Length: 602
Image (cartoon, rainbow, N blue to C red):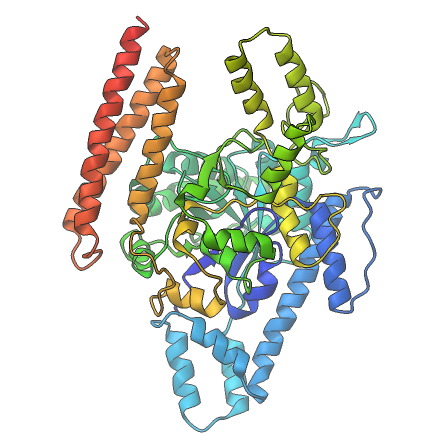
């Protein structure tokens, strides 16, 4: 039966921290970030009080406190979500308002919707309807996200703890020990030690019927990476149940740029190779499970392909489902304007509502050293600038989740921290640079922002909780798509927009998602060329020319695609083709620049 074919991805650290509690009883999948166990513990205390449950603090003095906090919070969310779902089913005895809401949100083509309407068009039989509901309605999955590279070593005083107590390892253990029957989305690239750690937990392995209690989902931006990671895990007896393709640059949060590979060709590669991948990887999986003496599935396991990043209209959504055969489409950024689904404080919400293209930019503020989508004028950045003006740049680093730089300390420092920036500025002072050079390097040091705190604070402010440790500054990381949404929306309005029953975008100048991504990639390439202008070497030249060639192939793919389409994007075709032609001209200019820079170095 067709149920929902969209999901709400993880957003920041706190924006989807309790989203499953808001939407899973309505059959919508969503994702909780496991970065911040301090925030998680504060939310657990709040919900225990709200639901009148006993609460016992899990202090950071306890052994393995991070994993225990995560397990306890996920169990609370699991139980509360199941209770909401049971209450929804039981409401058939009364008004059935919640059930009607559940069904109304489903796509129009849903067989479930059709059956419900038939069932309720006759004389109302509460017992019969309740039986049908129990057999047919399902909860949305309560999924979790772990950024694999945010895996800081931990210490007791000066004694380094074993790897299993690293942040990502502890988060994985916290999830593995929870009651959840769902998926963990592993993002930010491959972490072999963390992937190997999965073998310690039975819930990640399939049974003979192919059921897996806790599934692995890999967020990827190219097929080659997916294949490498899929093989690595299969050799350990672990099956990847879903590849979640995300646009390299047309997304929210951290942006993991590909080498110029665009989203359309990437999705086509996954679509065309899906069955071959299953056949090849399943052989490796069976061999590994047999050698471990574990249960072997009787038949090939299923593989989902999903996609997210920049989708903004019902037509784009349906096209990804139909043309690229994806199983679900992720809608992230627009849901930041849906308080029924996400948790954003009012001040930040108001800033998002009025944000335009120029307010949304790809920044270097992330301490991870990865490009990061940012909202100009967010309160965390304002806090950062005040510290610089007071001649005290950097954050006090109260949480240290990304204290990963070991240039000056074995325990690691965050590049956004006051301690790290003080050392770097002191070194800078001794170089005797010109004022211009000094200012450029000083700004690069102080640009880093305390995102691991800022991305969680919004949830505390939204619920009126104490922010004494964190401070009031909020970081927010919407994708470029935010510019085209200009009002706070209800859940029904947003879902109706996804399925084409409503339109919440009032602007008429929103570019097609593929064209928007192309524009961001061209800007990215332009900046990379600028960075190489002073000293181009052979490695840089090869990278830039490869990037250019991949973009060229992507554009020609789109030209052929839109030429062949019938009955889809008819109102946009001319504009899309014109933008693609202009993209080729821009690219040709970039190629000439790269070759000229290369010759000047000879």
